[in-house]
Length: 143
Image 1 (cartoon, rainbow, N blue to C red):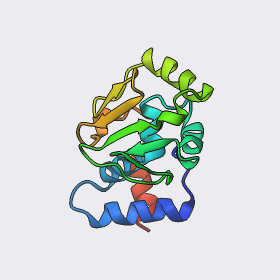
Image 2: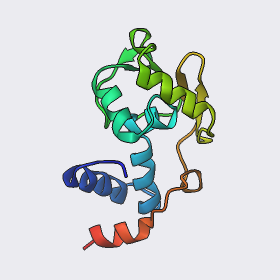
Image 3: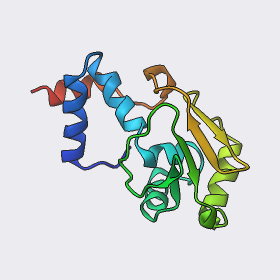
């Protein structure tokens, strides 16, 4: 779902496993906080793959600085927005129109007029309604 390579996914698991808390929830939290996923959730693109391309092409800013790394981890309070030069791109306009009709996750705040958003708090498991059984992932990688 998040289009990460096996080695990247293993690194996310290892980091979640070493942190204090429930490993599966921490893993999902890290994946949700990826910049390409946040751009998708804020409506900067119609799909995660398209959001990855938007980020990779340098159309997104985090706290006023251009970031073109899809795996960049956003933090609480970060402001994510589409750069001024990219606001007229067709795919971004389509994404914003689609997102305006659909709910934004509760851990994010979106401003569709300015094509920007803010991270309100870290995503919790109940905030992510994807058909993922994270316990099975943890069992697989713990071997």
